Every structure is written in structure tokens, then in C-alpha cells.
Image (cartoon, rainbow, N blue to C red; front, top):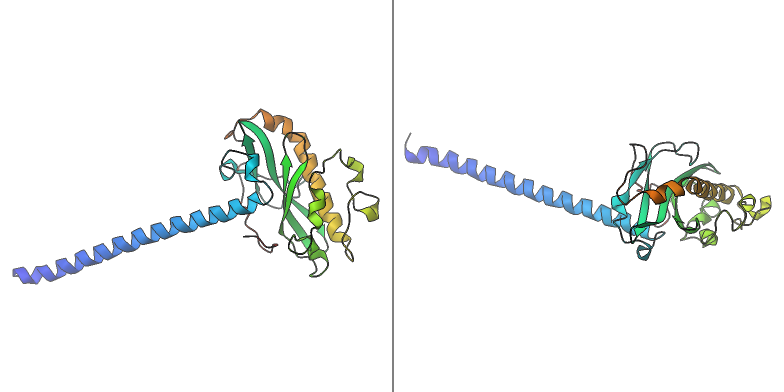
Length: 227
């Protein structure tokens, strides 16, 4: 075979190799960019209930698995987060599920001040409640969830953690009682769980693991207007 006979196959092979390398590098770069976008989306979502001025650690880096079927209603492992300020635990974000919604499970996140056990914010992650009624728990539909900010198990008294129709402290939603009753109970469950575990959590340093070895992320399915 003369020189021209093997030059063409070699050139084609080199071109194929170069094209494959370019595609591989492009795919890796795209994947990294998508993962970064997902991370930023999740962080923005968490910051709606856990303001960044309340912590100075990497909130996403604190993510740990948690599975509490009885205490927090989990049907499968979820993820919780810890915020630290100057090396001290400042807040926790707990996932909780109530099975008492009108049309099925309601999943939410509850951000709790680690110093005094008060609620910093709440976020509905998933629900299937009736449009125009039960969906008023969504912040884009009403400000109903805002009434829980600053509340704790002592303000109001734990026995008053009910909607007004049941003799409690919290407003229900006009035309819908089952949904707000379920959400109020779920938020209370998160506070009870935090109260039991905060003494232990406060002793732990940033990065020190705590929870069981399974989790998923907090990406929403049917949600209020998450970013």
C-alpha cells in the first residue's frame, strides 16, 4: 500500500477521535452546567424560608437524609438542612408530610430557629388539594401560611395548635377546613420533633453527620410557584 493508501483512513480515524473528544467535553460541560443550575434553583427555593443572613455555612452542603415515618409522616427518606452562624447552629429545615389532606398527602418544609424553636418560614412542596379552596395554602394564592412565622410550641400554647374551628389559635381557609387543619398539624409535628432533637443538634459541629443513610432531594412535584 502506498503512502496515500493509509493516509486517508488515518485522517478519518483522527477526525473521528477528535469529534468524539469534542462531544465528550461538551457533554461534560453541559452536565456540570445543568447540575449547577439545579443546585442554584434548590438553594433559591430554600432561601425563601431560610434567609441567607441567618447562616454563614453552605446550606446545601449541610443536607442530610432523614426518615421519620411516625414523627414526620415520611413515606420515604427525605432531606433536611442545618444552618450555622459563627459556628453555632442557627436554624434547621425539616421536611414533614401530613396524610390528612383533603385529596391526599401534603408535603412541606418547615424552617425553625435553633435558638428559640420559633418558625422562620414554611413552604408547601406538594399537594393535591381542591383548586380555589384547599390550594389557598399556596403563597401565590394567599398569605395564609404567614400566620405561622414567629409561632412556637409556647406561643401559642401547644394545646392551641389547631385551627379556630377546633378551638385553636390559627385561622382556617374560607370554605376549607380539612386542608388547613392538616397543614397546621404537620407544622406542629415539625416543632415537636425539633424540640426533642435540638439539644443534640446544637452540640454537633458543621459537617458532623446525624441522620439515617437514605434521602431524596426536595425538588417539588406539584407545588406553589417554586423557582
